[in-house]
Image 1 (tube, rainbow, N blue to C red):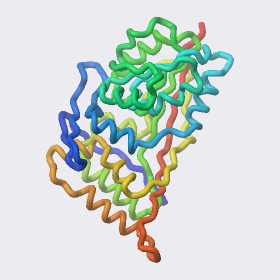
Image 2 (image 1 turned 180 degrees about the vertical axis):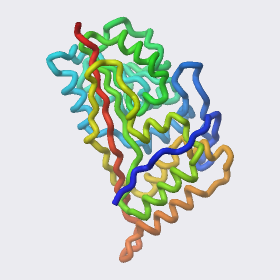
Image 3 (image 1 turned 180 degrees about the horizontal axis):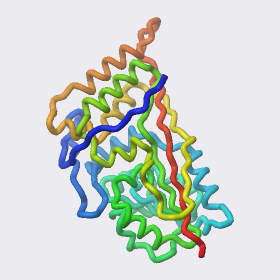
Image 4 (image 1 turned 120 degrees about the vertical axis):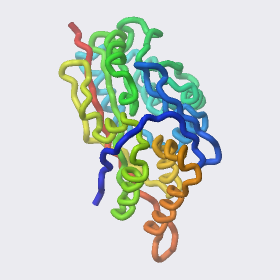
Length: 299
């Protein structure tokens, strides 16, 4: 039996310093009025994000490829990944498009991206300003797990400007994870919903509901909700993933010596310890994927 995490109350994020890890992580508020929210800017947090966040399955990029090769599509020449973070959503596009550009508001995230994919054109800037691109020069704009941080009307306006007729906008991400032991899932749920109550940014609700209340700016856009990410992790990796949650790191601002996450590790270790070998077994983790796909009209 598996449980999906639900909605939580929110508060404004200002600054948090992570002391759970061996290094500080600083978070900053809005980049500017009407611009993308900046949450993952610390250099060390960018490294944590790259290490512990799940990567998307090949099926996601198969869907993108199919959508961009339909007869009404503009082609597969140029793709732009907005809110690209460390580049994990950008690199797979190089197998489909001749030219790929990655863009993120965080300089530290772009620094990480360039380390892993030096051949890709990565740059720093907000999603709402794509002035580095000329009108109707792009075949695909993607954004993975980032649309909820953006000023969507301004972003959509820029997307419509830069896309060629027939060009595509694909928005995708993953929802809250489930794990394979019912008792363990309850512990994770309690941490997410109760311990971190009030520490999630208000935009987090869009991830909880898989962008259910957001519509793309093109008529006839569609959703796909049948894919998932599945991982088998050791306990350190799963706890590392939880420690990368922005709400946890915000929580540490007012609870700098908290042992909550370490206590959770110990409780999960007990649940996952094999009675015969006394070894801590792996955790089966699943994230549901959602995809929103739309196309700029050809007429």
